[in-house]
Image (cartoon, rainbow, N blue to C red; front, side):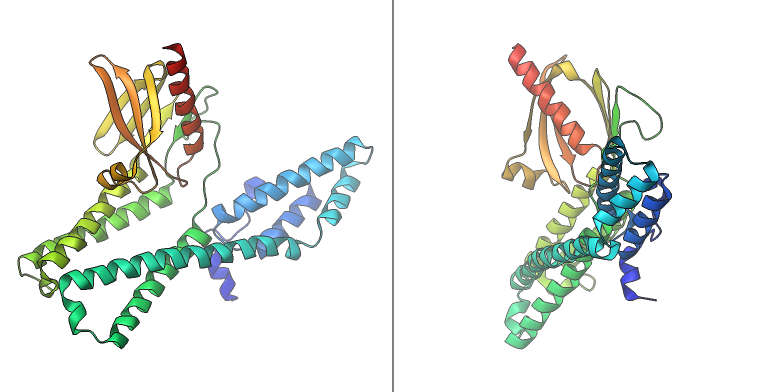
Length: 322
């Protein structure tokens, strides 16, 4: 099996919901998909764009007097070989992999360097060992995160209705199941790390030699990651009148006409309220006066962009009314 096929997991098959019903164009899209890299959600973004362009070009050709069959064949020919068209998608994935892997790998390697410095173990390492550990940490985390964000993760497309029912007047903001499972895994691993480092500060377990300061540093990082994973369990149901927030242990209803402001969190606010994604501050008027809450959104969440627009609009309209 071609090792490139591994970079199409999970769901390596062509997404059938992208079929156009036209045999010529569907055959072209399936061939194109076979040359693309990434999970189904990653490939779907590129295939959806090509599919829409094909349909638009075919409809235009039909409007010019061609039959649908002839128009489809001409459009597919104009787009060129599927292998050449897929090269653009593959190059983009590898470019994101190199850039993302480098940035995240360096960040992790620097964090581990700080840990060794605080734990006092840096003085016992020679320059060769220190350089080797820095490279190992960077490559390990960089490869892992680069693969995830380049070949497995894709920003979700807006969906016009609720996940579990149709509605013309509302939408649901939520993280897909894969993101929730990843969040659970990260929370379990980081909680285990926090327990080990707390025990290490007490001189117990395999982290005892890291020292109090080094263990405290890793504990803070672990707790920061655990808290940031909460965003994966946020579900926000929006309709024409209100927002219904539901998260881990929290639930509230906010009327849209009560929203007074919506802004990105400041840097120190992001540090104090860790969120895996963009952190926002939402203000509204309740029965007991002005209220505020933190809101986390990221590219993995379906309809996150729609919610941003809705909150921006609601806050602007309220300020204009006041």
